[in-house]
Image (cartoon, rainbow over the protein chains, first blue to last red):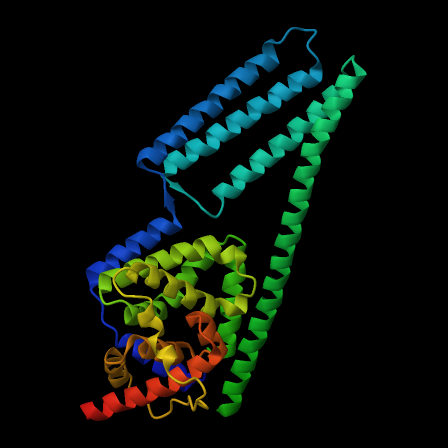
Length: 193
Length: 182
């Protein structure tokens, strides 16, 4: 579309009148859509999950610290990881509740990353624990079971990384293309003068 | 901003949205809400409904932008989403047939769809309101985005030949309205 066409389009759009009250209501809805508010029932759901996170942090933390001396070290570390995860979850949800809104750009990513890291660490420890079980069959079963989850997690992460890298590359190329278009436009304007 | 530069910028916006950049979605909404509202307003009678349709369209965009394979097809995709949303609002009040009744017009017109001569935006705006829904819709898309016949066909869900003939007859109808009004 050339500039004349674009100008005409803009004038056509400007010809449309609207009721400010409807527009205001729409703006509010869009704002709410963009920054998901944590209020009412949703707020209490977050509070419940925050309490659960804190509860598991205490339970796992206590288990890690108070387990009998003969309890395997890896098992103790596994409980420790559980406690850290529960605590991190409680802190993250507590911050969201305090802010009163979910940052849709960063918070879901933080939650997913935290869950992924915890699962990978826990499964790895679980497999290590399996290799030290006295009965070899049980140990192998534990390692194989853990391996399935670990492979699934790795595949998911690799695909996600490839996709993100592809998008980033295309974005960078487009940014260069955009800058070139801007330079060409500036040069054309300069020549016209 | 030239149109090409704008096309690159919009493509960038889509990629940023796909990467989960909320700021990019805000920019996209600000860029597209006026033309989309204008289009939706041509499809639905009440202004309040038009705002509701627009808001629902953005919700669908939010959910579906990740699946948009070709960022360059963003305009077609947005208008199609808006149209489908408007149609689901109208279902029950207006028969879907109303959207497509003009498809019965012969499709073999060679389609001189050049719309030069229509320069007065206010008159066109008024004239559009006097046209049938299918004519109003196809002309609005043409005036707003300069979309190709194939793109308009994809939005309307009709063959390109139908779009050509519809544009042809819509232009004639609009001219008639404008001449009548002096």
